[in-house]
Image (cartoon, rainbow, N blue to C red; front, side, top):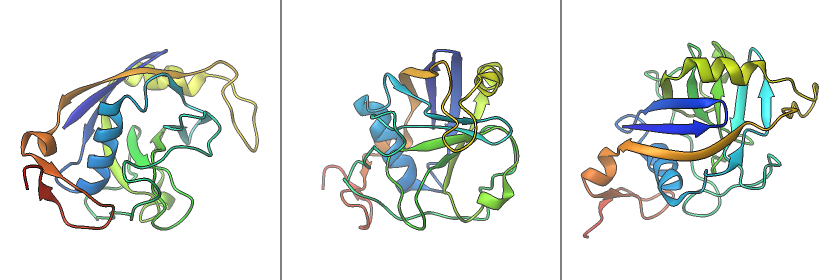
Length: 179
């Protein structure tokens, strides 16, 4: 249930909540496995708030889920924006998750039940600190003045794949891949 984002500022090891938000975790892991996040940038970086990435266009307007289009939120009281290093799906409103995600720089309780938490950083806080210090263009876009790149992703454990579980559609139930 862990991946490492190898960024231009260091590695971020993330523990994913596959057992609590399985559809969102499945989407994120499948995008990681496909290389969709390789050589993409964190296009938005707001000190004290978050860094956002996962858009292959680098504009903040791109990126698709593995099913194409959007998929629904998965909210739970067990996963909250209660600390530095929370990883969540970015969206444009309810049930509009795609590929983009963000990592918090601190507690963000106003995002609870607005953005699906998919995991948390468990190692690499030095890299997260370095990311937060990158100067940006400021208000509105907050684009980093020097690129913060996800060079590649290593998947350490994927219990969904290990158990042969797939989500063949954005709304349907999980299935065994051999079904």
